[in-house]
Image (cartoon, rainbow, N blue to C red):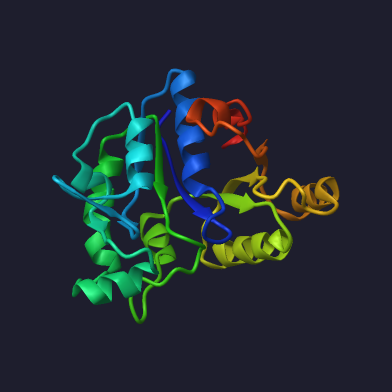
Length: 226
């Protein structure tokens, strides 16, 4: 097996990293080598080694193939704002070309299961013209969509799926991350998502008291991926 996916969310704060870490852990439990990367991250903390992002570190913790932090997260910004705004404030030019080389290096490690995690939703800007989705297009990666299940999630999920298809990429699967367990008509919403999204549901992850990669992995099914 040598599979790689771009993991996107229907919005920000829908649990992309939580699900990505769970998927990587599920792959490790299946005996697969794993590698996760976060090409662009804002909301980083200053450390003695430089800026570090909690999401990127979470992916590294579930990666059996070790790479230096700077290769996992080549563009790190301190303000917790949209990446293109953080880059502008830092005087950094974010381009698809600038992201391609480090992400191709990640893919060249040929892990059995590789995840490249986006930021926010599908159409997060990189610059005045480019979006982070353009990186997924350039890499021609199938997409795993994390749906943050709460009021309004159906429209967000369907619009994201339509945009992914319009960009010529395969929606390989989706995960229902139940961020609001009090969502009205929860089961009906989940049924509608299953009916309308053109890909298998890889799992329904409930609101967990103890959020760990091991706990999340219990609710995921990697064997449903092509």
